[in-house]
Image 1 (tube, rainbow, N blue to C red):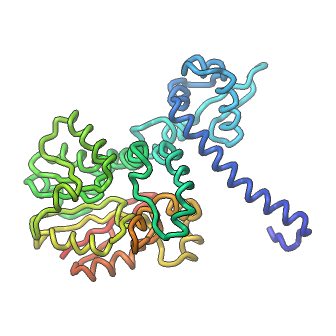
Image 2 (image 1 turned 45 degrees about the vertical axis):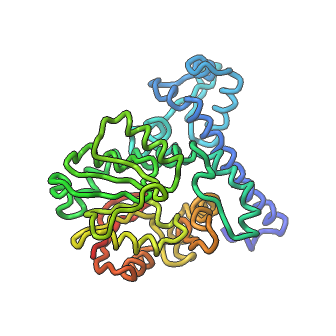
Image 3 (image 1 turned 30 degrees about the vertical axis):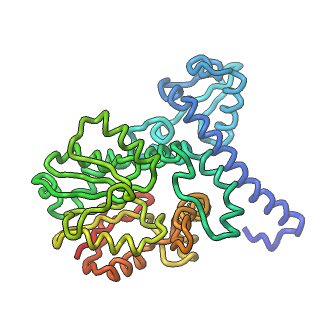
Length: 363
């Protein structure tokens, strides 16, 4: 559409519509958070077919009038399906909607970021100070629910794909893990990926490191109920990283771009790896320039916004932080930083993921 052919008044109306469509998205995102936290999606997923607002309210023990208005938002936003039956409006979830909204076991489950939405948006209160001083906030500023949200964002995909797709992508890794090697996961969060590996490979030992106390508390809660004896979780201030040349595999899942000193961390990873050790680097798919990201990534505006509220804020949570941000670690930069640290091999793995790229890095 050539908006230059429109009158100035129509151009203003069109621009206003564009602006308020962003507000609609933000408000509806809040309604998705409510649908997840109140169990509304799960209750709908348990029914094959349609239901009225009264039936959903009864199933969830909630007030019908509030449930009805929530359903109207969700239907208007085309998240929940609806139709007229006799004198009633009825609602339902499509099969894809169930996987994204209500099935924790689906690799497409998407409620993690909505789980932590209130904490993410509360970061707006800190942003004026951050913009003025240049110093952001670390992940623990989002509280324990922030850690749970990150866990729920990544664990479903890891459960579905880590053992079946990622481990086989690194040649010979499965046999090494079967025989027993030393693995360190840096930025382990709530420990989901590490515990999946630890359960599958009991002869190997696994150590997770993170600077988030909330994430580590969550990881240790899960560990206590798991019965696993070959995995442990640590804060680097309490337990220093392993000695030089002692680790066979280092993994970093979605965390290098969040770090205040990523080059220093990459140097440290190089140092702790044994001579034949490897680093599995997993980070956001990003391209070299802003123009490339905007043209190629339909979610670029979301990622730049989340960067301010979360990723870049963390990466600038100390003075002179690197501030890479969500889309700040394209393959070219990751490769150059790895080579600068002393690595000689940097290979992109053929692992399909909607958000992340996977690399094998070796000495």
